[in-house]
Length: 312
Image (cartoon, rainbow, N blue to C red):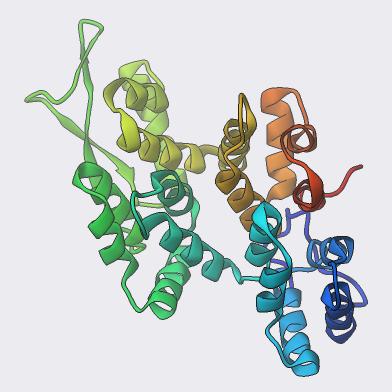
């Protein structure tokens, strides 16, 4: 029942007793009112694997589904975090992707965040889980909701076999960028998913063009296409820094993009949250905890701070 990664803030609870946890959760929710502190104390300090054991123990002893009871007792963003924590990783990603696609409009940011950052092995599991949970193919759903080059990029990201995806490399003549000339070369940039090879390609690109690949993407592309290419490059260079930037942007300025904040805090807590926190501090000179404190409140704030590693 090991944790998903070894750089997470959420680690295996020692002396774990699922039956005892299930009983405590039942007591926290029975009768009038809910003891949110108990829910936070237990669920934010157990691994996903341990939470599955608690779900089984709860069903055995109470005869009801723990997640159903939690949903009926909790509300708002706090409920979203708790429900997310109860899902195995590929189930959570598939659930987020389905929500991004269904209904009016598409949450392109969610598609980009997940598809650009997950490994081949993770993508394989997500695709299988999506099919099982929704009785639909993730690729079909993505194609039905997106179009053009953006769609082609997402489909390439879904094709976890090491497939090459080619885009035109901009050629510099007399210091001026020209996008697509007769002498066009091709830059293998996507979905090779061979990190070391691609990092070398990016270095070569900088030598040839005198410009970082990210700068060229910003100059030559816009909208979702720009966002997805930047996400791919950033995840290849430094995945925790990519997530740190996403967290920062979700909280800076007026308002909070809670969907992004919740998704990253839930999905990365067991994998690389320690590294994300370190990158956040390095990049912005402030702790992730201080941003969460300033942008959230109540039990929602409390559980996010615990997932962040508690207040040290």
